[in-house]
Length: 158
Image (cartoon, rainbow, N blue to C red; front, side, top):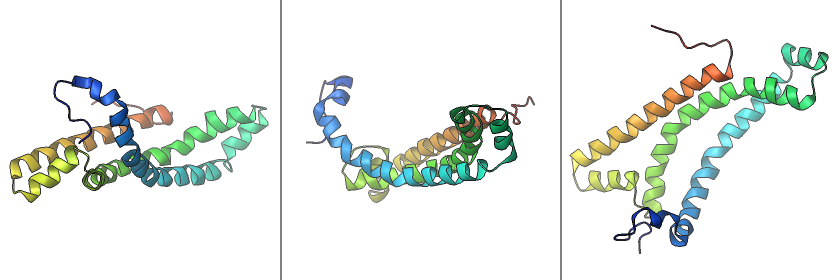
């Protein structure tokens, strides 16, 4: 039977062992594919930031090494990760279409594929608009997060 399809179960079906059992492989597939790039970029950014002058100054002030790493280096290195992650959001949603089709998981991606293959264009357009709005919203969230990561960036009033 299809996970997530139960008549009268409500939201309890999402906490069932059967649902979680069927969720493991698609989740691992997506996570392994999309986690490599941000991890490599974070590593490269940390190596670059650790050689900066302000890190040497923080070390010269006598700050603890974990404070230098987390408060000074990681905060600046996260800027590149946030930028790449905001670009990867669209790729991840596009990849969900493939993952849902391969694992026969009911979702927006599978609905879009079925609607396009059966020439049901209004449904295909609606799913595309919803996914596009989700990508735009998540990119807005990543842009706003720049203010909290970099003190030089301020939210302006228009």
